Length: 292
Ligand code: 13P
Image (cartoon, rainbow, N blue to C red):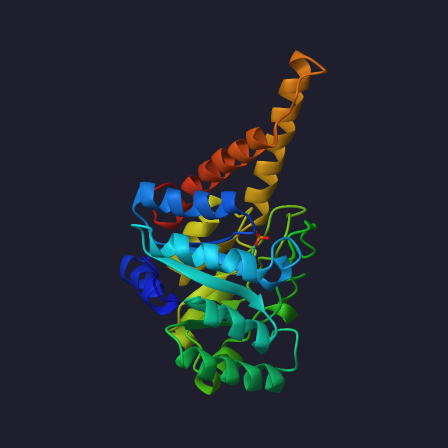
């Protein structure tokens, strides 16, 4: 069933867990997210990032996401990730998206507040929850793969708790994406997360917090982050990498048998679906505190 971002986060608060938010630029990733949620009995967020528009347009993937969410037995929120443009956001709302992220984190603070307020007004006219971002988490989600720049995150880019309180009060956003050491893409080394910053943010804001750059983080860091107030974890890059590695293996297995063997595209899509299910099952269990 299709569920609002606020309602799905309320479930996370009730169970002190985080909901996995999986970027879905393909049918395989949508199916793997929803099928795994149904198998395990957890809610799930499926997300389209504005930066993935060139992989698959919102107008194509959006209606499929909404249709599959509506007919699922699991609670599914259909979410717009890293939207920097209110006209694009409006298109997602018209398609029936139940969560949107307005990302003004690259703007001056005052401009971020002004546009986030307009985003909140728009969401208020629909059955839709709003996530915003303060602080910096490195390059945007663009689906093209990049290495995470900041393993030792400088304090300067952490979200400031006092500013976070002011931002939420001024904009009325429902969830806040915060910077405490995670960044998008592939980690060059071990990420060092500041749980002190996260705890302060939660304590000051009393708002559900969002971890971006959430793939490639250790299970124990996930657990600590959830204890400190993270209720939504964005996961993309590592799942896409595992699926890519599986495709490489399928091709090399075929070629190992016989160089002239025909490799069919549907063998790749099946392998991608399987690999994503494995990755999503693991993290969904961790996010629900079912695995150590
Ligand atoms: P990763 O790059 O760590 O998968 O993070 C994805 C994300 O935060 C999307 O918004």
